[in-house]
Image 1 (cartoon, each protein chain N blue to C red):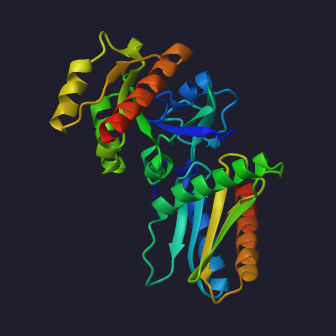
Image 2: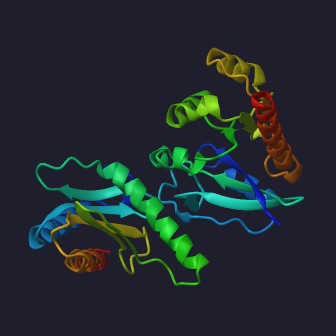
Length: 140
Length: 182
């Protein structure tokens, strides 16, 4: 991962990775979990065996997707974008803004096989985002 | 009345002046997809473009210019050809204050691939204050080596007239292309 990613100290990056791995262990069908800065740098990630996913590329795309969501929400008079959901035939992919983390703002991504309900993936992503927020708040 | 739309894309490294250029000529405040920049060691800018910038300029007679700016950092290179899709022209905006603007151009060339030969393009040299003289010959040689004969235009995108000139050159390149094809 990028040494500058989010300017989080290594022990916090490790803590975030543990949280991602825990979310994957607790949620059936998850294949990928990612924490990225809002400007597209991967902070930590975890990938299930048998999957080859370039976390750095996905982090940049998550940033673009989130920025587009924000711009679109603003255009139609909605509030800030809290997340982006990408349902496909193979996977359900969810990107959520980690709430109340000011510096640096973070995006949490979770992908699970489409056999899992989108609701359960969303719930898992939200729980993971809150766990990361709580972990960072407790140590900073 | 039917509106004729023309799309021009401005691409270049972070801080090259893409957003500034769009801001100078857009009839309304540009639509930005800015996010906080966490790499202040790379650039002192507080924010950076994550998807694209967008502005519009009414050309009169039912014609509108839609100007898009790409994100600057290389990690967003997947966005460059997406934003450039359907563009009638591309402005490659080079920041002459950077260490190696030729290498910067090379990276953009790789990412745009076959669009390079197909889309009328202009090489705009910005931040001239950083150099003694605009290295036009250097870039001319570089482009010739790739079989390209693009206009090379020293510019200052903080000046509205300069940006309008760039747009005019791209539009006329496109017009010449259409005339050749017909």
